[in-house]
Length: 113
Length: 118
Image 1 (cartoon, rainbow over the protein chains, first blue to last red):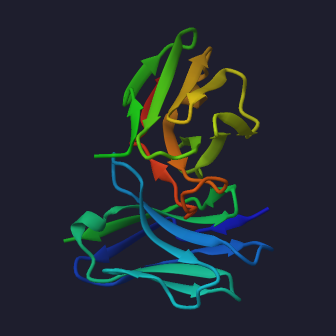
Image 2: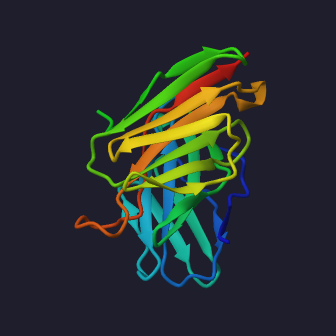
């Protein structure tokens, strides 16, 4: 069974600074997807960024980028130029074929003015 | 505007009550999910419906009863709940392989129904 581990329950960052959230996973699959989801306080969970395992190039979405290390089974999220609106719970998730996504426990990120 | 709508947003019920949570998706997806989100715990998958058929029941107690009348609607019927069932219940939808639309693996979530059991 796949597992996803987020080792940082809480993090904080100053506005305009850069922060990296860690995620590791365990799987025997060779083809899969990895995701970072964001859940702002009392708001809907939304997809931040997605990476296909067969792609070597790291995914990037504006200020959000990932460092995907397939051999190490590591998938960290980097947020550049942090904004107050980035304050949220961030969940790392693993998906393969038609099996439901497996989520980590989440990291609570606070952006401080 | 969210493509997945959940009602009610907040619900308070006694242990002997019967209530239902409703989820509707407007994205044309073929799979729908119920997740339970409790404080300091990972998201717990409860049920999965694929093309209206239940494909996963993650050892959920029988006091939670799902219903999926069509691919766009999903219900969670609640009866004789316990205080530890208090949580945020999230509905999600996705496009799974087997249809003509591409499968991105992505889940689309509703805003959740905050349940408090007294």
